[in-house]
View 1 (cartoon, rainbow, N blue to C red):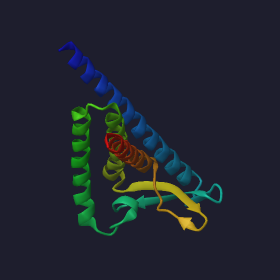
View 2 (cartoon, one colour):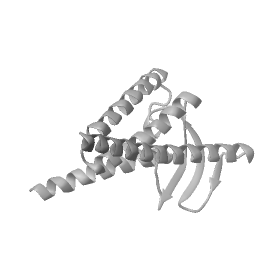
View 3 (cartoon, helix red, strand yellow):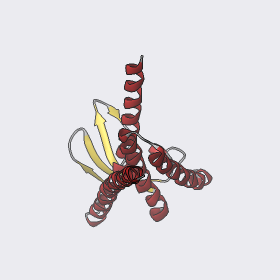
View 4 (cartoon, helix red, strand yellow):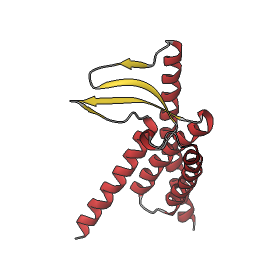
Length: 165
């Protein structure tokens, strides 16, 4: 019984630590960029040929899709909250450390963007990448954490399936 309690405690501490790191890196980066752009009266900042900072207020879903649809925005906000709760449930249910780490990264990023939706009524995106004529959607640190968590989780699952065969 003590071992189960210790495992649960370790799982909770690990997930809280990772969620906090993901949330804080996202939050601090957004506050810094927003304040920097406001104080310097900027709309974009050229860094190099591959990276620019452009402050965009995303009122849509991922990558600015459905931006003009207010019904979808409200529906999406509720859906995102439910997904966050479900992912946190998966953290508690999981027995694998890599799953806990991945679900925690996804949760930390999702919580960051969800808080923005509540506070700003939009998500500030600011990372703009260009490479040899390829221009990706503008995104933020929370999006990086979410993507990293999903890609890592899928990679581990695919590798695990390959090893079983």
